[in-house]
Image (cartoon, rainbow, N blue to C red; front, side, top):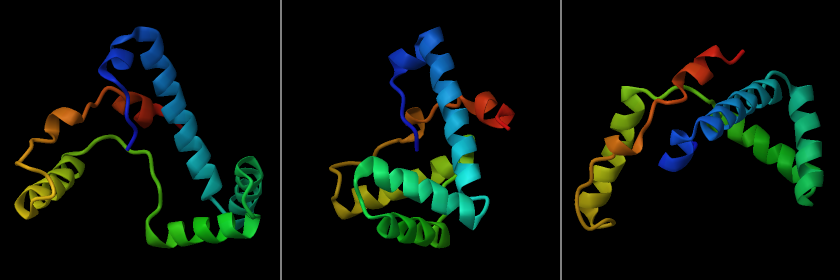
Length: 118
């Protein structure tokens, strides 16, 4: 998930910057995951940036791809329903004090930016 404050979404310049960021992030993820060489290149750069051993970063990235690939996709009814099921389970088990409606937390402002990003 990517979060933005309502104030940032309401501001035309910030909204444009967020849309650009989301597109760049989508392109970077697609490039990173396109092949093993790209994943290795990304892992080396990321490991250096955060001061962690490259093998650890690469192994973690590979495991992440095996478990669940990161993707920037538009909001869907299925995604909202999935989050609602989690929230309902949390309410039923007492993790949160009462049932909540998660739908208002979702905003489709950047759907076009995501769909048009190539």
